[in-house]
Image (cartoon, rainbow, N blue to C red; front, side, top):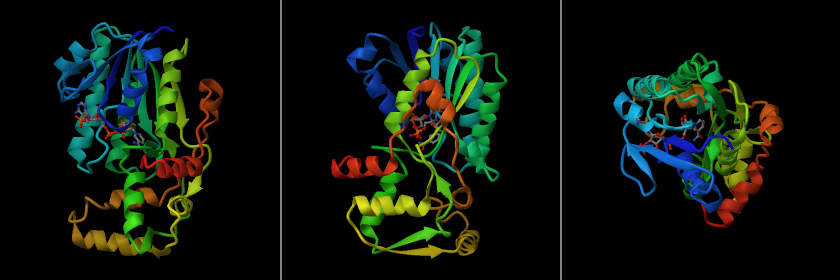
Length: 297
Ligand SMILES: NC(=O)c1ccc[n+]([C@@H]2O[C@H](COP(=O)([O-])OP(=O)(O)OC[C@H]3O[C@@H](n4cnc5c(N)ncnc54)[C@H](OP(=O)(O)O)[C@@H]3O)[C@@H](O)[C@H]2O)c1
């Protein structure tokens, strides 16, 4: 074990909470001292600050061996906010690391950064990734697929919606591929990164074991809930015309960016992570059935 003092940005987010939970277990508490970099006080050891406030980052990164950078803007479609948080925020963090002579960074990127139509979020995460790649740091970039699990922002909404709706609307033909990954598998891989002796500028795709189509995704939820529902496929051009005409009125539900994202395949090769990090992601079907049966989602 080489990294003892760990700073976690984004500790209050979906993935961050699961990571903190794991690191709070006695076996990890013995190994690591972790500090959460947060905008609001939390129970565990924390430093208050924000990615826009370089001074707070300078204080937070003092005497740290490795930074796990999870903080990011993931929910807003506002361009300024995405760039400020994801690009400028990452730049500020890298500069603070440099001033405090920290060498190691684990950065959570996204498969969306490699899409042809990336949208504001994907583009800002791509630029953040470039900043990390062009920095002096010994980094590991984890390019995450859709992460699901208790407290998530996507699968839990799908489950809630499917329970309510008598008919399931699916955008497009539902044949595009996704590769959802269970949040505990992501946490496991972050912990595995902390154990790498020589991590020097590595990039790994972190997604589920196999690609599935969006139709499969919906069917897995229906089967796990023991529900039968009719599905209707809504042509992409209809949704886009509707969104064009209604402007931002429905952006809390759907945006052009989401539709563009749904239209693209997000299947990736995870073999490097399987080989180097002993990454063994769980099957989506098994986990969804388990989470629903245990009322965890
Ligand atoms: N979840 C996924 O499916 C997924 C997929 C691919 C990549 N990722 C990446 O994984 C990382 C974590 O994702 P997540 O799902 O856990 O995100 P999340 O639930 O939206 O959490 C975002 C975290 O970032 C913090 N944050 C946002 N703006 C900040 C700022 N200006 N200064 C300091 N902290 C700030 C938030 O703090 P507050 O609590 O104060 O708001 C929160 O802790 C992100 O970088 C995301 O791009 C996630």
